[in-house]
Image (cartoon, rainbow, N blue to C red; front, side, top):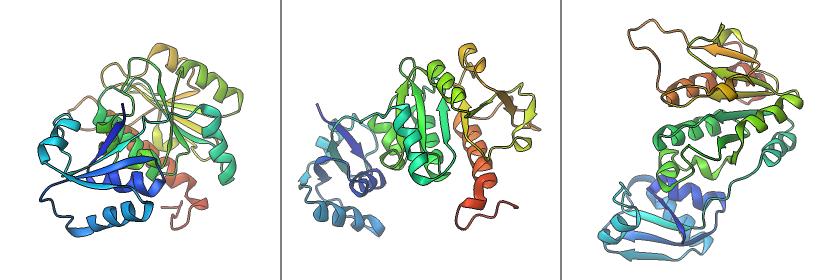
Length: 253
């Protein structure tokens, strides 16, 4: 059964990335206001059938989620493997930069982290095979379509981290008791940033394979930041440090 993508941004990004779409469904009476006309132009350019349907049909296909009056039927998400992600770095002529998510279960956190990873220039995202959210329609929407532009691999994290370390990729995990502040760590070379789950943080098997654990300073009364927020902060610190090779970014800021 085909997967679905819903929401104007998510459908537009799926079209722009070249994903195989069976058709685009738009609610009867819906008007593509603002910049949403771009989505319909992309559909026509790609030759993807566009069909008007009752809004109730979109409600059913999106399982009651907020679809904004548009939905596309696509093939199941095609997960990549670690070697494919490393090949992206080679093609770009850049040191590997990966985000590793240790059992993130909230689809909004997963989508937000994929979006931040893509925006920060990461070459790919690793998620575990079991006990974690996968790339679902809700994740596609939460990522604002970023999942169409960055490779996501579903794999055994412990094994993947061993492979990365053997290839001289530094594994840096986020933890409340990290020995150093995230701003005091060199993130310019080959690096994999690891974010733990919403409840337990990093699993023991993953924490053991980290070369270094870093923390985010906390001066307020809350104990920790949301996983999506914490991961995004460190991703952007990595982008800041690596910025000398990115147009428009001043690494000295």
